[in-house]
Image 1 (cartoon, rainbow, N blue to C red):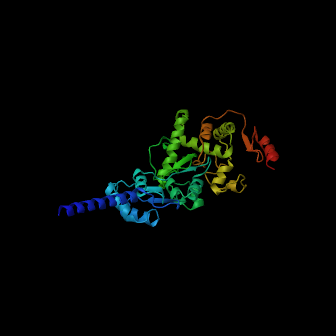
Image 2: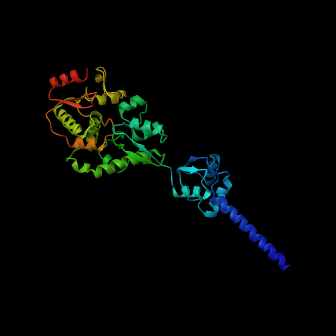
Image 3: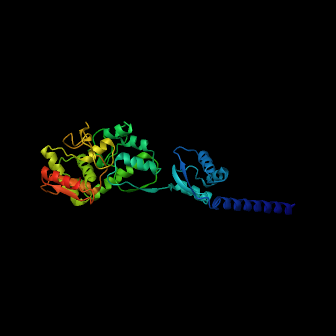
Amino acid sequence: MMNKKIKLLIGLIVLVLIFSGSAIFLFFSPRQSGNGDILFTIERGSTVREIADGLNREGVIINEYPFLVYLFLSGESRNLQAGTYNLSTENSIHEIVEKITNGEVASKNVTIIEGWSLVEIAEFLDAEDVVERNDFIQLTGISKPQADLTGINQVDRSFDKDYRVLKDLPEGASLEGYLFPDTHRISTENEEEIVEIMIRNMERRMKENQIFEQLEEGQDFHDIVTMASLIEKEVATEEDMKMVSDILWRRLRAGMPLQIDATVNYITGRRDIDVTIMETQIDSTYNTYKYTGLPDGPIANPSVKSIEAALNPKANDFWYYLSDPETGDTIFSRNHLEHVEAKNKYLR
């Protein structure tokens, strides 16, 4: 009788060891190899069952039940975090759960080019499968000229954070000019979080370069960003930017139109250099041929060097300038007659 009990106990122990060994092998060994990586998204509010079904459907796991059992035994079922994860069929269940509970979301570097407009940024992020173009634009708002081009009329910001760079932003204005051009590491598909990444980066770079300390008393940072966006589109080198900055600020003080081709292209959506005489007659406050003063807002997202140029113009006695289309050099003129001569020489 005792021998039977001992044999039964030994048998149970063996079964437990076999089960435990199988479970350990199942939970900690790769499912398979050679099938590559899979981007898997867990939406906010997803249940454990929905996550397990999704992993099974995407081929990350063979069956949802071992995954569910592991979550139950490990007590990690309440720690799964929303986000997009780079998972592999070579990952074990333990590795998959570890990534999701630690929030090790997939990330990628996206580079926003200096001088891109908000719409260009949205189109780029859409092409990179980061965010849908129209959703991004509706969040950031859009200026009147760009709204006319895209058919998107949303201009109210749902974005209301306590950033110094946004302090002087007019009520209802878009975030044009404030999506800082840089290489950003994106680890989310949430539009608001992506916008915050860019604005936080701008805030950081402005503080690093002591931009706010350079503002004169009563000077509006939004005007500086607007001027910087014009400079960004006009010339490339730091020296030329400071020269052009002085010319444009003097034109404003003298009541002269700024006559910036890039503002007209911003209205029409054309991205080349030349504008037609007819286009310079477009009735828009962004048309710096027709109206004096700064346009209603930035026409692009400027770099630090163009913002610094807007704040620190280099005094000169020129009133006009143009770019040599062959060399890119900036040709400066002291009066309109010299400017006409330069146009005849370099642009015809």
